[in-house]
Image (cartoon, rainbow over all chains, first blue to last red; front, side, top):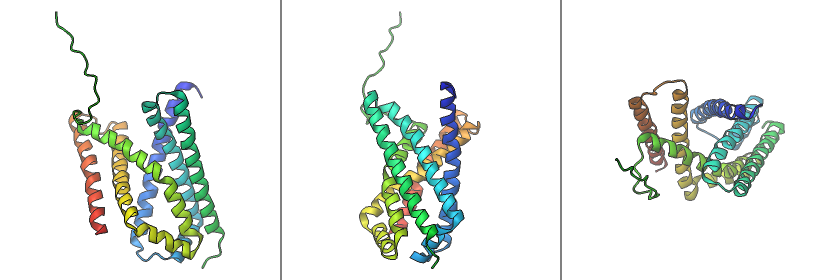
Length: 116
Length: 126
């Protein structure tokens, strides 16, 4: 992809992820509020469902991409020393990847656990 | 000959009067950064809540603790503002509400809407 198209790619990515993030959040909030009595079995069972697991991994991945584009824009605007900006971007990547993997681990364990 | 006025070079934040669109924009940034910084905490809490029954109880206890409730209030404002400002942004992208007047009004809806939602959440915590 050309250098100019990279900007377009980030722009499009930000919008596609934004729509998915909004839809997921509103849907999950609706389910959460509709069902009032959350205990461990209900919560664990919900997150262990295949559909919910896939939707939540997709959500986490969307957050990662969305935050990466957003934080990169903010860093480019405010941090002008290239080496320092690179440090911040590396830190951001580390933080996002570690969080994503931690969530994937939790979802995987929940999916593997026998129900009940 | 008309003397050109020098552009003011200062960053007195109290002297800057942002229009509604400017407030919506800087709020979009601040809310995004706040949510970004809270991600590791939520990833950890999410893992804790799923790993075992005692872990779940502990996560619930953390969620109900006062420091977390204060944080959650900031994050509810952040999410509300970011979501509303994001929807406004997407609408502007497809040329909805791009006239000066309507863009100003939608920015006001974003700014006040987010504060209103946060206030409603604060009341629900009492």
